[in-house]
Image (cartoon, rainbow, N blue to C red; front, side, top):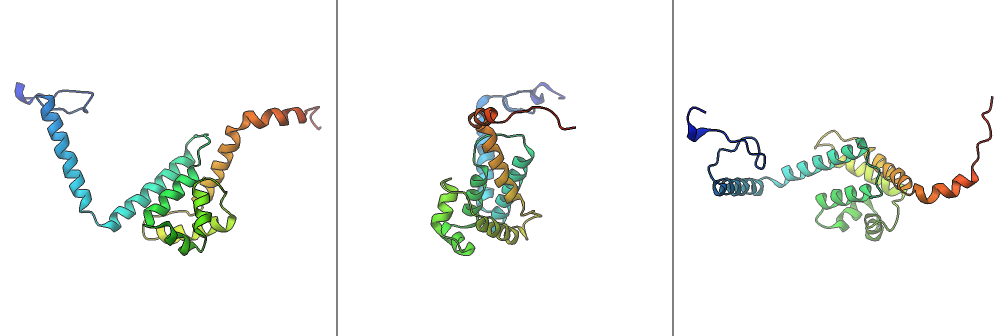
Length: 176
């Protein structure tokens, strides 16, 4: 700020601190920064990337449970798919570890079938072992996400079922 050449420009498009004299300078610096980040990512150990992805999954699941999202999306299957694809290069390896069929996993992920209770409990135990060395992970989160999805699904379809049940339920008086 001492002289005119070093003045800080406030540019809302590119953040608070923009000291570039031209748009081209700013773009070149942005490209150089991106290349440096990509190069650093290439050199990260696979174990560190895996830990980061698992942490990301945990945080996304917790965020979903603490949010007020009431949509009809299947968040459980999205999280499950991310979990399996993060840990295994082939889904068949996951099914072998859980002692389930590849068809049943595929049907759950593609929303053709609800997961059986047995599958859910196996997933709880599996994630407990996976997250043991990564971070504190309450394996109940899988059940909470699954049932939150079920609740959201029923609530999102309320217009379909409310009329039917509204005609059958009456309120005559309060019991004293």
